[in-house]
Image (cartoon, rainbow, N blue to C red; front, side, top):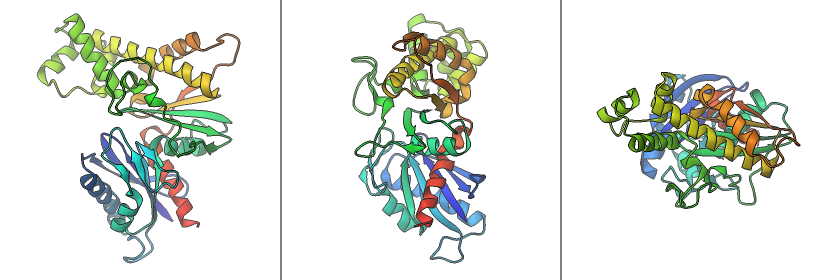
Length: 325
């Protein structure tokens, strides 16, 4: 029996056809649109492509086919996992997303926070396996977070915990789409990496390096991946931006450890692909700023084993619960 997992992020909508063992059989992707209707069109399109291309049809059309769909959403998901309350990077506000998508695809739909979905997958098959208390950070466009205790997700009283990316680390700092200023994800994310690189370019006036030439040629085209690629090539500005990301990751990890005292923290999301550029430095900052450092165990800080497919796999696994009801 197959399920589809869909990772609905601020930049892209990615869907995977998943079997009972968690194997990804096929993938589809689309850009994330800016309106509710267009976003739901995009989700429907990638799910339908997977169903049709594999000769399966949802129940109610013909055959047995895909039995359920899980949506991993970058936003606040209500405790009943049918509504999206709010998302800084998506258009939904108090939207009955599960019901809307069910009407379009003809199978049950379950919503889950994207970091929660990734944590479930990493617990079952990856870097969190066997951990009693673990935190997952999905570092991409922003920062999503999940907390697992005894293998169970902690969602808080209203289904939105733990929203670590919007801890304010810089009073009156960079503006955030959530409405606040100085949120952690404004300094430690793919978006934050781009902002830091542009600030460094403006501050130092360095127009000779590869990154400066990229920005001059395409001012709107700079991305976190391009900054990381320039850092790997030795660009001084890009390396400086990476060092700032590492510092802020370490600072934030010390806060996370002070609150939750996890035995392992897994860093996932698109930025984790560049882990060798910043993770060792982040560990050093974490160890230096942790309360009681030197007199308590340090959390193991690891990168995701499932990479950017963790949210897809986890949401599909969670959707299987709809089949078993």
